[in-house]
Image 1: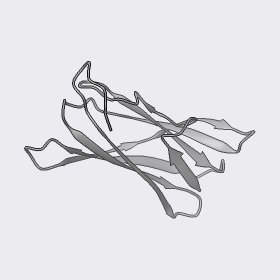
Image 2: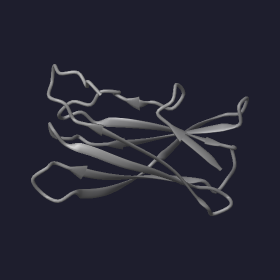
Image 3: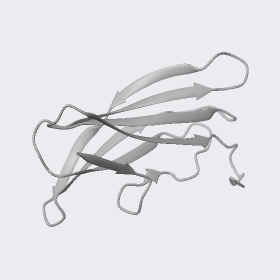
Length: 116
């Protein structure tokens, strides 16, 4: 199993996250096969308290048989202005081996663009 995220066909929506937004994380996996599962582990740091953690199961959405890919979505959030979000996407396939993608974003106040 191979997984990917934050690509043209498996985007994080919205790309820039503002306070109170929920985020849809699209995830692709290859090949299409039974027994797959994907979870997203989220760690939220706000600078004042220690990080909080949550875990969300991605929901299988559809297969693209022409490319032999499956597509999944997980919804995380909403978040608070200034929070730093680190996430780990973990896929397990027929081989029972964990396949991981990581990412992060910062929650912005409304009207501000990310300058990173």
